[in-house]
Image (tube, rainbow, N blue to C red; front, side, top):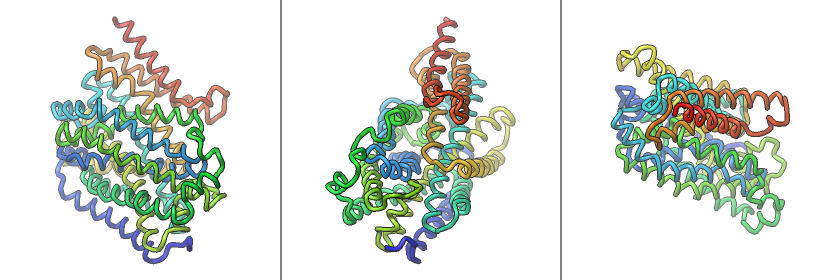
Length: 467
């Protein structure tokens, strides 16, 4: 099999990219307000909620990064998707319906608005800053993966490939808002599931990727459930599920759901599809390790495996599924950060009486600005999982404890929330910088743990003092 795409497969990829633009333009004609732009005016059903969860969480780190880790470490490479499934179950059972009811009652659009309900405006500000920083990083991780995939497929340099992927994602997201994200996610999840599970696994088996061969030909470490490394796996097991409770995109979906029942059932249904996706990602990554040893950049393992083994036509479908996984995560991250800038900063503090048309124009502009910022970050930092782990750490360490407290406690301390978020955010960023500078062995510890510890200590200490 040739590693260069033929005309048919290349045509499939560019047809898919063009379709995303068309959907964005179509969706742009069905929105008249920021409620339409950010939460589709709260009329999204169960199936769409499930697709939104799957398409946004099963992105570059899960598929491209997961296959890369399965290539390197074996079955433990599926740990990322397993952590996502665990987070979906917890959030679906304990938070989804409650958040939908509160959002409808208070007409909420963003997570920082939800924070201000129980705390105060200064806590909303620091929560907004934290959310924007994290979601720019989330988008950057997906754009980095999309750039790497397109570079492998089209034989372009990484920068040109990154610019193409970023331009398409930013255009349809900025043009169509949440409706465009919903419509494209239907298409993108379907393509992803067909490509990874229905087409990918059988072709891997046909090309020597049977379980018997993989378990005998690959190193024994590839069969270890902790091959990725316990410290990293533990950090993911904590940071990813916690991020469900503090990620603004989680709240955006719940505010967009047409009922509490749709919010809960859509979230739980998403977990049903995550298991076969995890199995497919592991299988393809390990098969690539068997057939194509010695790949320099393991982020390209999945793309190269597809180019080497898939028949004409199926290559294009599979590669479109991979691109769909990346783009469907990047779009909601860009939209989320844009909502923070429009609703939580401009409308809340700068121009509360801004007319709807002006807010809509600003939302579109900020979506483009966020996309450009994420592109620059992706250009500078190309390690997909490392970028996303930073984002997960920022969110979960700084926001988890105050968020849980405001939902489960009757009386909350406003100063405790503000100072715990601020101190944790400073700790995480400072710890991360010190680890990059290699100042001391202590900074090799993942910043999640000191960030959570500082957040818990400050919140508990100030709450106790107030009593």
